[in-house]
Length: 156
Image (cartoon, rainbow, N blue to C red):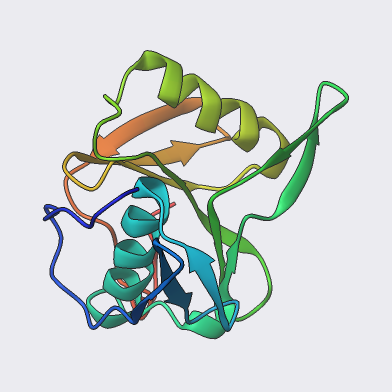
């Protein structure tokens, strides 16, 4: 049974409940209680942080969108859209105990080969990486801070 651990993210008012020795967290996007797993703990922190600190509207966030990759069904952890409906951010979350390795970056790169999203976020709640993709020049740049939603130019 997972018990919430401190993360390298601001705290947020998580709605946690317990039923039959299992902990659940209320997901504000999907409007339902989910089993509280380490990865879900990280995801819910990030959803709140992206909304409160970076002003990404919750209405433009989608959790675990399905995609087909090499004839396999996969699920992205979080996709954020702009007001025109274009995808602007793809996030991959891991449990705090999972190291962020090249394999994790390969996973999000594989997902992004389908989506073609210009901004990537990878986090285990302790370590956070942000990457800007330039599809025209076929390169990427690690950045130290995510752009806020309200910036006119995301810098792509």
